[in-house]
Length: 395
Ligand code: 3PG
Image (cartoon, rainbow, N blue to C red; front, side, top):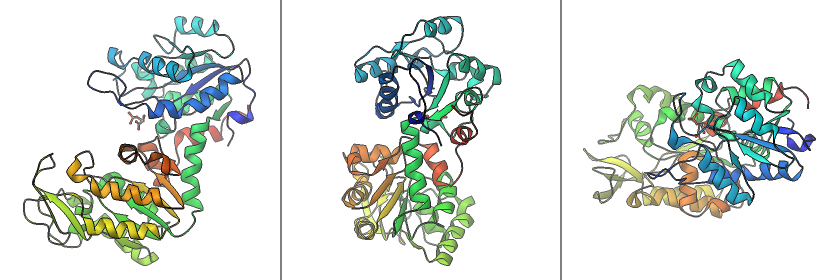
């Protein structure tokens, strides 16, 4: 797989697909700029070599029309602060005004095209839209790991028209997941949590064939407990997934993988701040109570087990960590990973939010910027945005 290091970019117009899909707060300001920061190495690399850098991204999910609050000018401003140089925000991503702005660029200049999803053609992977984007540049770079599971025009259409390579973030992300999935140092553990089994089923099915140890936490533990006949109170049980969950258990057993469910859990009547909580054995969840976190004994056991591994991949929080009363299990797992002298990969989305909130992101080997893309990799499935680079024209 070729990256920007393998090509000559000096004086060239380089279209960089980034994932600037950042969370916004109620005032419409950037709530977390992790994804913007993660794209800086590629942008700096290109600028320093005198490329003319044309950035593009989506933001949120506008339905193919202009939404003022989702203009990328706010991302351009943040980028400009972080890079300490001007980043011009264009008012569209294709069309004559964009073409003339690009034609006026000098070596080392940076522009950011408008939110790609203001055009319905982006999600539809419309070929002529892709061609118009491609016409702006001489080289295409995919650095949007977080969007590479989407077969959208800017991800899979454009690279069919230009020499196309990976950016440094895309390379780092794909390498991190590939390494642990294909050649992990053992013992290798996966910690899988989150609210719903259905979001993680393909990940569970793939990961169980690769790990030595599988730890299950979060709300989805309820479906595992129910599949074994235990009462789960008012916890959300995905009844249509009970067989799938049993199959994961059987696979684990057949392969000699230890699958560990929490021994105890924190339960509450409501998943709200100030709700009254109790710690109960996971096999004795009382009527009307919902699993809100793994319990202290489970956290001890998980920490102990993780301490004996050499590689850990973690996807999905152990509880509703956004609420302080239910954050302890997630914090304990994060701490166990932070202390591990081995490889720790945080599989994106809310798990990334959690390790950042606990101030432990820097202690991990890799913290993914992808949500769905990370899940796709953990499920062992190809990313369309990466596959297309393999077939792309040689630079
Ligand atoms: C993400 O946030 O996971 C990516 O930016 C993709 O966004 P999407 O789920 O709206 O396609």
